[in-house]
Amino acid sequence: MKKITDTVVVLDRGYYTTCTINFHGATVVSWRIRNLEQIFVSRQAVLDNKKIIRGGISFVFPRFGPWIFGPQHGFSRIMRWKVEKPPTRLPNGDVEVVFCLNDDHFTRSMWNYPFQLLYRITLLETELHFDIKVKNLSSRLPFTFNLVLFTYLRVPDINDCQLVGLQEKILQDERIGYFIPDFEENNECEENDECEEEYHVEANTEVTYSVDTSSKSTEVASTNELVVTVNKPTNVLYPSSLDEYEIEHVVDDQTLIIQKNNLPDTVIWNPWTEIALPNFDQDEHVKMLGMKTGNLVNPVNLLRGQEYNAGLVLKLKRPERDPMYLFW
Ligand SMILES: O=P(O)(O)OC[C@H]1O[C@@H](O)[C@H](O)[C@@H](O)[C@@H]1O
Image (cartoon, rainbow, N blue to C red; front, top):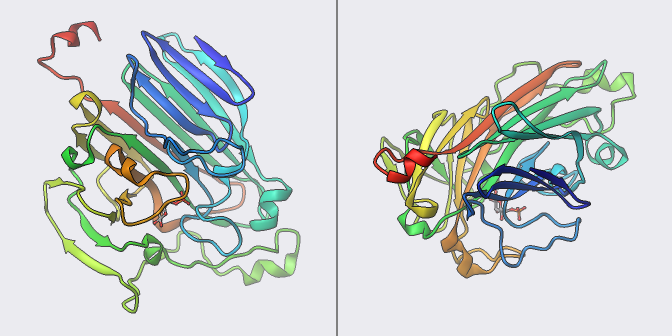
Protein backbone atom coordinates (compact mmCIF):
# COMPACT_ATOMS: atom_id res chain seq x y z
CA MET A 1 0.00 0.00 0.00
CA LYS A 2 2.78 2.41 0.86
CA LYS A 3 6.49 2.35 1.26
CA ILE A 4 9.19 4.71 2.51
CA THR A 5 12.85 4.15 1.78
CA ASP A 6 15.80 6.48 2.32
CA THR A 7 15.25 7.88 -1.13
CA VAL A 8 11.59 7.73 -2.02
CA VAL A 9 8.03 7.46 -0.81
CA VAL A 10 5.80 5.18 -2.85
CA LEU A 11 2.04 5.60 -2.76
CA ASP A 12 0.16 2.54 -3.96
CA ARG A 13 -3.52 2.83 -4.83
CA GLY A 14 -3.77 -0.81 -5.96
CA TYR A 15 -4.16 -2.21 -9.47
CA TYR A 16 -0.63 -1.06 -10.35
CA THR A 17 -1.52 2.55 -9.73
CA THR A 18 1.37 4.16 -7.90
CA CYS A 19 3.15 7.43 -7.34
CA THR A 20 6.79 7.67 -6.37
CA ILE A 21 8.17 10.82 -4.79
CA ASN A 22 11.88 11.36 -4.25
CA PHE A 23 12.83 13.16 -1.03
CA HIS A 24 15.20 15.25 -3.13
CA GLY A 25 13.07 18.22 -4.04
CA ALA A 26 9.92 16.24 -3.20
CA THR A 27 10.13 15.45 -6.89
CA VAL A 28 7.45 13.16 -8.28
CA VAL A 29 9.50 10.76 -10.37
CA SER A 30 6.77 8.34 -11.35
CA TRP A 31 2.99 8.25 -11.66
CA ARG A 32 1.69 4.98 -12.98
CA ILE A 33 -1.95 4.37 -13.73
CA ARG A 34 -2.60 0.67 -14.21
CA ASN A 35 1.11 0.33 -14.79
CA LEU A 36 1.24 3.00 -17.52
CA GLU A 37 3.82 5.67 -16.72
CA GLN A 38 2.51 9.22 -17.08
CA ILE A 39 5.64 11.14 -16.06
CA PHE A 40 8.79 11.74 -18.05
CA VAL A 41 12.19 11.36 -16.43
CA SER A 42 15.23 11.60 -18.67
CA ARG A 43 17.35 8.53 -19.15
CA GLN A 44 20.23 10.89 -18.32
CA ALA A 45 18.71 12.06 -15.04
CA VAL A 46 21.21 12.06 -12.21
CA LEU A 47 19.91 11.04 -8.82
CA ASP A 48 22.79 12.23 -6.66
CA ASN A 49 20.74 14.28 -4.17
CA LYS A 50 22.56 17.37 -5.37
CA LYS A 51 21.52 18.25 -8.89
CA ILE A 52 17.94 18.77 -9.92
CA ILE A 53 16.26 15.65 -11.21
CA ARG A 54 15.79 16.07 -14.96
CA GLY A 55 12.12 15.31 -15.31
CA GLY A 56 9.28 14.45 -12.99
CA ILE A 57 7.24 17.09 -11.22
CA SER A 58 9.39 19.46 -9.26
CA PHE A 59 8.55 22.22 -6.82
CA VAL A 60 9.99 25.61 -7.76
CA PHE A 61 10.31 28.09 -4.85
CA PRO A 62 10.99 30.91 -4.02
CA ARG A 63 12.12 32.16 -7.44
CA PHE A 64 11.34 31.11 -10.97
CA GLY A 65 14.05 31.63 -13.55
CA PRO A 66 17.62 32.83 -13.05
CA TRP A 67 18.21 34.17 -9.56
CA ILE A 68 21.19 36.18 -8.41
CA PHE A 69 21.05 34.90 -4.83
CA GLY A 70 20.69 31.21 -5.58
CA PRO A 71 20.15 28.51 -8.17
CA GLN A 72 17.84 28.90 -11.13
CA HIS A 73 14.26 28.12 -10.13
CA GLY A 74 15.07 28.47 -6.44
CA PHE A 75 16.31 26.08 -3.80
CA SER A 76 13.36 23.80 -3.08
CA ARG A 77 14.19 21.49 -6.00
CA ILE A 78 17.61 20.65 -4.61
CA MET A 79 16.78 20.17 -0.95
CA ARG A 80 15.79 17.08 0.92
CA TRP A 81 12.22 17.45 2.12
CA LYS A 82 10.81 15.77 5.20
CA VAL A 83 7.67 13.76 5.59
CA GLU A 84 5.20 15.71 7.70
CA LYS A 85 2.52 13.05 7.53
CA PRO A 86 3.44 9.54 6.41
CA PRO A 87 1.56 7.87 3.57
CA THR A 88 -1.98 7.21 4.70
CA ARG A 89 -4.83 5.37 3.06
CA LEU A 90 -8.04 7.38 3.24
CA PRO A 91 -11.43 5.73 3.80
CA ASN A 92 -12.18 5.97 0.06
CA GLY A 93 -8.98 4.08 -0.81
CA ASP A 94 -6.97 7.07 -1.98
CA VAL A 95 -3.47 7.43 -0.56
CA GLU A 96 -1.84 10.67 0.53
CA VAL A 97 1.42 11.90 1.95
CA VAL A 98 2.41 15.34 3.20
CA PHE A 99 5.95 16.64 2.73
CA CYS A 100 7.37 19.73 4.35
CA LEU A 101 10.31 22.04 3.92
CA ASN A 102 11.43 24.63 6.43
CA ASP A 103 14.02 27.36 6.25
CA ASP A 104 17.48 26.48 7.48
CA HIS A 105 21.03 27.88 7.19
CA PHE A 106 21.13 26.94 3.53
CA THR A 107 17.90 28.73 2.60
CA ARG A 108 18.70 31.70 4.85
CA SER A 109 21.98 32.20 2.98
CA MET A 110 19.95 32.92 -0.16
CA TRP A 111 16.63 34.12 1.12
CA ASN A 112 16.57 35.32 4.69
CA TYR A 113 13.05 34.47 5.78
CA PRO A 114 11.48 31.90 8.07
CA PHE A 115 8.98 29.82 6.13
CA GLN A 116 7.32 26.46 5.92
CA LEU A 117 6.10 24.67 2.80
CA LEU A 118 3.53 21.90 3.18
CA TYR A 119 2.98 19.76 0.14
CA ARG A 120 0.23 17.16 0.14
CA ILE A 121 0.21 14.64 -2.71
CA THR A 122 -2.86 12.44 -3.05
CA LEU A 123 -3.11 9.49 -5.41
CA LEU A 124 -6.56 8.58 -6.70
CA GLU A 125 -7.47 5.89 -9.23
CA THR A 126 -6.85 8.10 -12.23
CA GLU A 127 -5.89 11.40 -10.62
CA LEU A 128 -3.01 13.01 -8.80
CA HIS A 129 -3.74 15.95 -6.50
CA PHE A 130 -1.27 18.49 -5.17
CA ASP A 131 -2.19 20.79 -2.30
CA ILE A 132 0.29 23.44 -1.31
CA LYS A 133 0.53 25.66 1.71
CA VAL A 134 3.19 28.34 2.17
CA LYS A 135 3.50 29.81 5.65
CA ASN A 136 5.28 33.04 6.40
CA LEU A 137 6.61 32.35 9.89
CA SER A 138 8.07 35.81 10.33
CA SER A 139 6.61 37.95 13.09
CA ARG A 140 7.69 41.10 11.29
CA LEU A 141 8.26 40.86 7.57
CA PRO A 142 6.32 39.98 4.48
CA PHE A 143 8.03 37.99 1.76
CA THR A 144 7.53 37.66 -1.95
CA PHE A 145 7.90 34.50 -3.97
CA ASN A 146 7.24 32.60 -7.16
CA LEU A 147 5.86 29.12 -6.76
CA VAL A 148 5.68 26.81 -9.73
CA LEU A 149 5.01 23.11 -10.21
CA PHE A 150 7.27 22.16 -13.09
CA THR A 151 5.86 19.06 -14.75
CA TYR A 152 7.45 16.89 -17.39
CA LEU A 153 4.57 14.87 -18.79
CA ARG A 154 5.41 11.68 -20.63
CA VAL A 155 3.80 11.64 -24.06
CA PRO A 156 4.01 9.09 -26.87
CA ASP A 157 4.84 11.80 -29.42
CA ILE A 158 4.87 15.52 -28.66
CA ASN A 159 3.90 16.26 -32.26
CA ASP A 160 0.51 14.62 -31.67
CA CYS A 161 -0.37 16.41 -28.43
CA GLN A 162 -3.07 19.03 -28.49
CA LEU A 163 -3.76 21.48 -25.71
CA VAL A 164 -7.32 22.64 -25.55
CA GLY A 165 -8.41 25.56 -23.43
CA LEU A 166 -5.33 27.77 -23.28
CA GLN A 167 -6.79 30.48 -25.46
CA GLU A 168 -5.30 33.44 -23.67
CA LYS A 169 -2.86 36.11 -24.62
CA ILE A 170 0.48 34.52 -25.36
CA LEU A 171 3.95 35.90 -25.01
CA GLN A 172 6.88 33.91 -26.17
CA ASP A 173 10.54 34.02 -25.65
CA GLU A 174 13.15 31.34 -25.65
CA ARG A 175 14.22 32.63 -22.27
CA ILE A 176 10.99 32.99 -20.42
CA GLY A 177 12.80 34.74 -17.60
CA TYR A 178 12.55 37.96 -19.56
CA PHE A 179 8.94 38.13 -18.62
CA ILE A 180 9.42 37.66 -14.94
CA PRO A 181 9.53 40.98 -13.16
CA ASP A 182 12.42 41.78 -10.93
CA PHE A 183 11.04 42.41 -7.52
CA GLU A 184 12.68 43.82 -4.48
CA GLU A 185 14.81 41.43 -2.51
CA ASN A 186 15.28 41.60 1.19
CA ASN A 187 18.03 39.14 1.53
CA GLU A 188 19.70 40.27 4.70
CA CYS A 189 17.18 41.77 6.96
CA GLU A 190 15.07 39.33 8.88
CA GLU A 191 16.79 40.03 12.16
CA ASN A 192 17.48 43.68 11.55
CA ASP A 193 14.77 46.20 12.30
CA GLU A 194 16.29 48.89 10.17
CA CYS A 195 15.80 46.85 7.09
CA GLU A 196 12.06 46.66 7.39
CA GLU A 197 11.62 50.09 5.88
CA GLU A 198 13.78 49.19 2.96
CA TYR A 199 11.37 46.56 1.89
CA HIS A 200 9.35 48.15 -0.85
CA VAL A 201 6.89 45.58 -2.09
CA GLU A 202 3.55 46.37 -0.55
CA ALA A 203 1.01 43.76 0.26
CA ASN A 204 -1.13 42.91 -2.75
CA THR A 205 0.95 45.09 -5.03
CA GLU A 206 0.29 44.13 -8.59
CA VAL A 207 3.62 43.67 -10.29
CA THR A 208 3.18 43.85 -14.01
CA TYR A 209 5.45 42.10 -16.41
CA SER A 210 7.10 43.80 -19.30
CA VAL A 211 8.75 42.81 -22.49
CA ASP A 212 12.36 43.72 -22.92
CA THR A 213 12.30 44.83 -26.52
CA SER A 214 16.07 44.85 -26.73
CA SER A 215 16.05 41.10 -26.23
CA LYS A 216 14.81 38.44 -28.57
CA SER A 217 11.38 38.69 -27.00
CA THR A 218 8.50 38.41 -29.34
CA GLU A 219 4.84 38.68 -28.72
CA VAL A 220 3.48 35.75 -30.60
CA ALA A 221 -0.15 36.64 -30.66
CA SER A 222 -3.27 37.46 -28.84
CA THR A 223 -5.00 34.36 -29.84
CA ASN A 224 -8.25 32.58 -29.56
CA GLU A 225 -6.77 29.39 -30.85
CA LEU A 226 -8.78 26.53 -29.52
CA VAL A 227 -6.02 24.03 -29.97
CA VAL A 228 -2.34 24.56 -29.29
CA THR A 229 0.29 22.19 -30.60
CA VAL A 230 4.00 21.92 -29.84
CA ASN A 231 6.13 21.12 -32.84
CA LYS A 232 9.16 23.36 -32.42
CA PRO A 233 11.23 24.89 -29.59
CA THR A 234 8.56 26.24 -27.30
CA ASN A 235 8.54 28.43 -24.24
CA VAL A 236 5.15 30.02 -24.19
CA LEU A 237 3.66 31.88 -21.28
CA TYR A 238 -0.09 31.99 -20.78
CA PRO A 239 -0.61 34.65 -18.12
CA SER A 240 -3.70 33.99 -16.01
CA SER A 241 -4.59 30.97 -18.08
CA LEU A 242 -7.91 29.26 -17.54
CA ASP A 243 -8.06 27.10 -14.44
CA GLU A 244 -8.99 24.04 -16.46
CA TYR A 245 -7.66 22.84 -19.78
CA GLU A 246 -6.97 19.53 -21.47
CA ILE A 247 -4.09 17.81 -23.14
CA GLU A 248 -5.12 15.30 -25.76
CA HIS A 249 -3.09 12.29 -26.93
CA VAL A 250 -1.09 11.72 -23.81
CA VAL A 251 -0.08 8.17 -22.79
CA ASP A 252 -2.38 5.48 -24.19
CA ASP A 253 -3.97 8.13 -26.40
CA GLN A 254 -5.90 9.46 -23.44
CA THR A 255 -6.81 13.01 -22.48
CA LEU A 256 -5.38 14.59 -19.36
CA ILE A 257 -7.35 17.30 -17.59
CA ILE A 258 -5.38 19.98 -15.76
CA GLN A 259 -7.15 21.85 -12.98
CA LYS A 260 -5.39 24.52 -11.00
CA ASN A 261 -6.23 26.76 -8.12
CA ASN A 262 -4.40 29.95 -7.15
CA LEU A 263 -1.66 29.12 -9.65
CA PRO A 264 -2.60 31.60 -12.35
CA ASP A 265 0.05 31.27 -15.03
CA THR A 266 1.01 28.44 -17.32
CA VAL A 267 4.11 27.92 -19.43
CA ILE A 268 4.23 25.25 -22.09
CA TRP A 269 7.81 24.29 -22.75
CA ASN A 270 9.84 21.98 -24.90
CA PRO A 271 13.51 22.64 -25.71
CA TRP A 272 13.23 20.61 -28.91
CA THR A 273 16.67 19.91 -30.28
CA GLU A 274 17.78 23.55 -30.12
CA ILE A 275 18.72 23.81 -26.48
CA ALA A 276 21.24 21.47 -24.90
CA LEU A 277 19.87 20.76 -21.45
CA PRO A 278 22.11 19.15 -18.87
CA ASN A 279 21.16 15.54 -18.12
CA PHE A 280 18.86 15.26 -21.10
CA ASP A 281 19.30 13.53 -24.45
CA GLN A 282 18.06 15.78 -27.20
CA ASP A 283 16.12 12.99 -28.90
CA GLU A 284 14.04 12.72 -25.74
CA HIS A 285 12.19 15.94 -26.52
CA VAL A 286 9.68 13.88 -28.51
CA LYS A 287 8.61 12.06 -25.37
CA MET A 288 7.95 15.02 -23.10
CA LEU A 289 5.72 18.01 -22.63
CA GLY A 290 6.95 20.62 -20.15
CA MET A 291 4.20 22.35 -18.23
CA LYS A 292 4.87 24.96 -15.58
CA THR A 293 1.97 25.98 -13.41
CA GLY A 294 2.26 28.76 -10.90
CA ASN A 295 2.71 32.39 -9.99
CA LEU A 296 5.18 33.72 -12.51
CA VAL A 297 3.88 37.07 -13.62
CA ASN A 298 2.76 38.42 -10.29
CA PRO A 299 4.85 36.96 -7.47
CA VAL A 300 2.91 36.35 -4.28
CA ASN A 301 3.42 38.81 -1.46
CA LEU A 302 2.71 37.03 1.79
CA LEU A 303 2.31 39.06 4.95
CA ARG A 304 3.91 38.03 8.23
CA GLY A 305 2.13 35.16 9.91
CA GLN A 306 -0.03 34.53 6.85
CA GLU A 307 -0.59 31.43 4.74
CA TYR A 308 -0.97 30.94 1.05
CA ASN A 309 -2.81 27.96 -0.42
CA ALA A 310 -2.81 26.60 -3.94
CA GLY A 311 -3.49 23.35 -5.75
CA LEU A 312 -3.13 21.38 -8.93
CA VAL A 313 -5.00 18.33 -10.16
CA LEU A 314 -3.93 16.07 -13.00
CA LYS A 315 -6.63 13.65 -14.04
CA LEU A 316 -7.32 11.33 -16.89
CA LYS A 317 -10.58 11.95 -18.62
CA ARG A 318 -12.63 8.82 -18.46
CA PRO A 319 -13.37 7.65 -21.99
CA GLU A 320 -17.13 7.33 -22.16
CA ARG A 321 -17.20 4.64 -24.80
CA ASP A 322 -14.20 2.65 -23.64
CA PRO A 323 -15.47 -0.78 -22.51
CA MET A 324 -12.78 -0.75 -19.83
CA TYR A 325 -14.52 2.28 -18.39
CA LEU A 326 -16.80 -0.09 -16.50
CA PHE A 327 -13.83 -1.49 -14.67
CA TRP A 328 -12.41 1.87 -13.56
O1 LIG B 1 17.62 23.03 -15.98
P1 LIG B 1 16.48 23.71 -15.29
O2 LIG B 1 16.94 24.67 -14.24
O3 LIG B 1 15.48 22.74 -14.80
O4 LIG B 1 15.76 24.59 -16.36
C1 LIG B 1 15.11 24.05 -17.44
C2 LIG B 1 14.57 25.17 -18.31
O5 LIG B 1 13.64 25.91 -17.59
C3 LIG B 1 13.01 26.89 -18.36
O6 LIG B 1 12.11 27.54 -17.54
C4 LIG B 1 13.96 27.87 -18.88
O7 LIG B 1 13.31 28.78 -19.70
C5 LIG B 1 14.99 27.15 -19.65
O8 LIG B 1 15.94 28.08 -20.08
C6 LIG B 1 15.63 26.10 -18.78
O9 LIG B 1 16.58 25.41 -19.51
